[in-house]
Image 1 (spheres, rainbow, N blue to C red):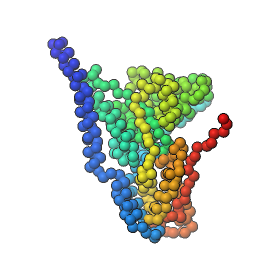
Image 2: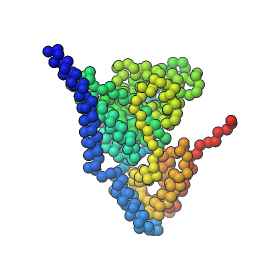
Image 3: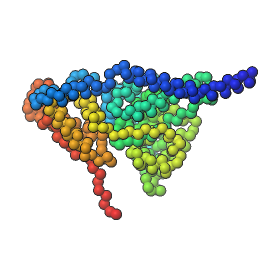
Image 4: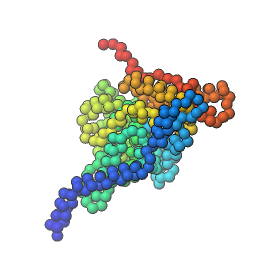
Length: 399
């Protein structure tokens, strides 16, 4: 009898890798089939813009391809902002409470952290993102492995692959790290790897207090609030400044010690930041290398992807460009994109800032013209579109 059990156990362990490969393949095929059934986001808009380019019209009142159909993509935002407003209220629909964002560093000082609630349809939100092809594929693999472990644990608890959910997000500002992190937490919740899926967003200021011991108190509170979800530390490399007396050096070792506890399995930690300083952080803290095996690199958006983000953002507010207005916008964005500094480029944030300037000029023009025509009130014309400053690196002073 014991020999039979041993043979069954050995056989199961030998087939576990084969089963994993089959499961991953079926999972990825399922995700791609679901995506293929629906038209790609922005596909209709691109077609309309092509028509516009083929039929130029100097009439400022002739609307461009940003029509009413585009407004259906009101939640397709790809910078470091939250998702749609409807998703912000999702915590009311889940059978668990979301913690408050107050962290007490000491009796006299408290700080606030941002708590992002889970979302209802994370798979749909992931597929809607502009670009991020590699990110989507890597997340699919990690989610599939988590689901596979859930299934295998029912048959061979000791034979499942150990899955670390802790991850590092490399990327410039405005490449979608916070947005993806929110989706990531909800996907892990749906896969059964996390119990809640909310995201606790922290920075260096969350942990560094004024008194000795503030760091440990803050770390313990943050870990407690992130239980069941994702703990995201933005610009994590700032906890590793070139100063041996800097208290930031205490934070990550404390965090790793707490996460080493077997009870701390219902949490995923995501460290975010620019690639080069994050790589230095890993080199100077060898323990992090093995604790954070999942690496996601968020690449800068292409010019065409920034145009698609523009289309979706404009549609959220019901605006539309006139034909020549759209041509002027593309020219302004192209000039900024071609001359940008890769070290300071804001990606989708630059688009957001450019559009905010356009909206302000548009509002001033409409008030001066005293128009009551709704179509004109929502039409962005060439006179509304002006360039904004493209961020540059400041020159270093000294030797």
